[in-house]
Length: 355
Image: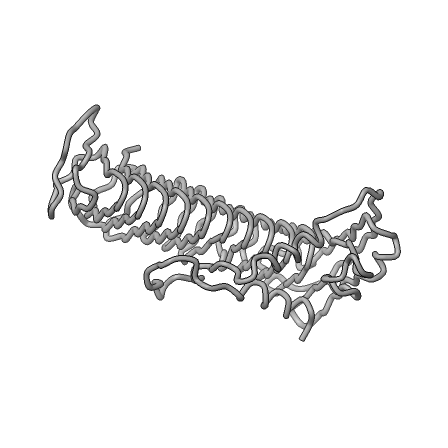
């Protein structure tokens, strides 16, 4: 098995659950990312390629163009370095790569860029001849940055240990995951996977009839201007900010971080926010109605919308149009009650605001 494939599998899958969490929804595209078992080892792997000495930078460039077709597939496996993908016309794939090191110039020759071509498919990988764990003992300090221009319909898969990943304008399916780095998707309707162990994940300007999934173990998850059937967001340690979103189903889970949701509530939709430590703020745009199930063990529940209270909760007071509730567990209805909104937080406030 290729070194990069094995390394990526070991790092991205070796992780136990960090905290109690509910049974996953079978419709979720990607299950919640879990905490890495040996976090020290992961940090050492990433730091091995981020570290630089005081020597001047040495570089070596790689360039290649390949006909792949408008609906082909491209994958890139990398250890260290950023990857950027944009789209162009025609049926040609453009690969530009730059090897970088602040070690000796000879290190560049020890890192190879391998391009495997098959009908309608191109697989690119970075191979280091020296063991990455022994960079202080005949290892290398080399990173490789990739810039790809692909036909818009091409499917894309990006895998990295240390580096930022960015995709813009792709119309084919996209999967991107890194251990240490940010993942950014802009105007990419078919995001199947956007994951980082240590880094932020940002989705912007996505419109699709399917489901989207994004998550980070240690980092924020940001979703802006999205329209989809379903949105699944998971974070272990980081905030979740979802803005200008239209979805029939939303599932947000985080262990340690606050959640902000700004968007619509569709008739018949389900919206589930499950937080262990952090506040939840829902800013809703002209909802027809919903049933609210809210539970906060240590925090208050407040609403700008007039709610009809049920169950064992009662309003404790109203000020400036906002109603606070005396108990930390409640069931209430707004409007026609056609949607279902469930909010659970162990430690934090729950706020329902109107836009």
